[in-house]
Image 1 (cartoon, rainbow, N blue to C red):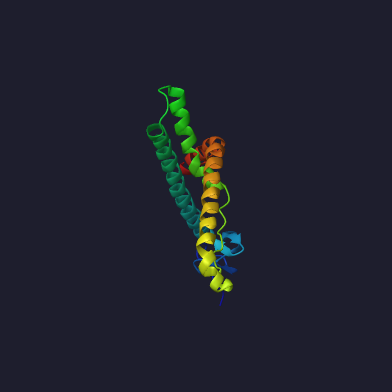
Image 2 (cartoon, rainbow, N blue to C red):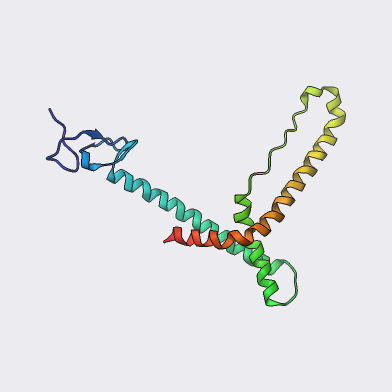
Amino acid sequence: MPIFCHYHPTREAVYTCSQCGKPICQSCVYSYSPVWCRVCVDAYHGSRQKAGAKKAKKTLLIIGISFIVGVLLIPSSDDLGTVLLKGYMCSGIYPAWILLPKVPKLNTDFQFLGLLVFILYPIAITITLVCLLFLLSLKLVVSMFLGIFIVPIKVYQSIKALQ
């Protein structure tokens, strides 16, 4: 007994949507790998757009708050250009920080050294923390200057994602 398409009751079904399980005909197949019907593909893209809009709102909010923090909390002269530049540089820290690679995790597992660890462990931890602070400080400075170029792009992308 033939199975008919869920959306076209007069056409014979040749596939089953792997998302919803409904039988579909050749013209209803929207995606072949995996086989999805148009309704499921539209629902999937709608959920991705909602997630993109949420991420865009978060990015714009963090950029705006960073700008305000830069303007209000970093002391400078009363020159309007300098005040706005501070805010602009601070607003670029977040998008550039995300763009730069993660600071590598440093391995502090020195168990193979036995008793020597008892003596060297505090020194090794201190050196590790100093290196980590240096890397984070370096990443912060690079993010601040790289952010000058990234902020307009991220703001444009975020506004476009909200539309």
